[in-house]
Length: 300
Ligand code: HXC
Ligand code: NAP
Image (cartoon, rainbow, N blue to C red; front, side, top):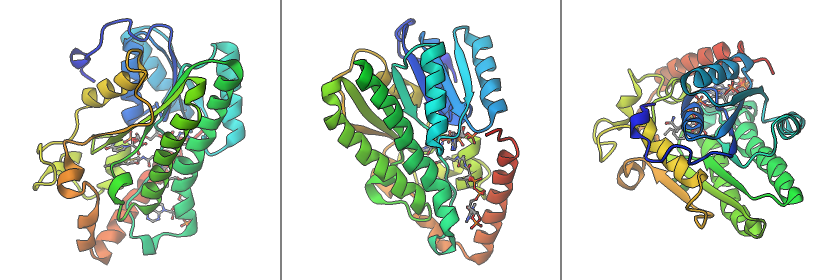
């Protein structure tokens, strides 16, 4: 990310300790870098232990400070508790959590198996709750204030054809955000969410636009009123606004950052209704090759 576009003053997040799930790659890595640059201690987790270690090293070499990588599968509640015990005892209590880890792929819903549905729902729907519940209950028990941001999609407002398990799960996390903002507001805990439009990341492009030459395609042909995809610093600035000090009264909100795409065109995959069997077959093969390549790097 180009740090020249950061809107916030140095040291804004001094003393904060933030966990970004899925922070080894993509948007999670970008947000981790932004928080680190502003003075926070950052923890990142993912199933590919080597990837989180490498990212932690890369970010510390670039900016100094402290980034700690954890190999943790958020589908496993016990693994979450073990990681958080370690963070609390070796580093100290977290002050913030970004629920960013997710799984997704495009598929006709009639082609999905139950295992295919679970592959996504177990990460996004269940894993996000397990993590939020484990950390939230620690904050409540210890009388600490805390701040949670969840990364959603704009499909929570208008549905996600061809990404139904993701759309359903993200909608549930939106409901969690609204519910806990109210229920746990009295404990000084905040819950907000960000619904990004397309931002170029390898994990997303290979699974959601396997036929596109680049993620730029997702904003062409009148699909985005601003005619472009998102820039990483734009997302990071919004995440810092919600996570950093100074706007604590914002609670229970989900903010879209998509260049007004969903207002204009729906911002979802409705256009894939034009695909035939051959295109779906090719997409599935490409996606499954990406899945297999990533799976081979998992250490948990
Ligand atoms: C149909 C598919 C499929 C496909 C996998 N499956 N790909 N079904 N079409 N393209 C099925 C498999 O056949 C299998 O079912 C089941 O899903 C589980 O597959 P595994 O590969 O064994 O799953 P697993 O190893 O658990 O991996 C989880 C994953 C994977 C979700 C499938 O993609 C992953 O780990 N992703 C993490 C990163 C990621 O997805 N990033 C993108 C985030 S972008 P059967 O029945 O055959 O055994 C995003 C929103 C972007 O979230 C919004 C843009 C605007
Ligand atoms: P990404 O790079 O693939 O990020 C997903 C991350 O989640 C990976 O680092 C992955 O690491 C981790 N993860 C997945 N399953 C996990 C599990 N069970 N336990 C722990 N970590 C897990 O894709 P991205 O584009 O940056 O997506 C990040 C977030 O933004 C997601 O919530 C996505 O839905 C959302 N989003 C992205 C876009 C976009 O345009 N890029 C748009 C809207 C919303 P491992 O595989 O190593 O576990």
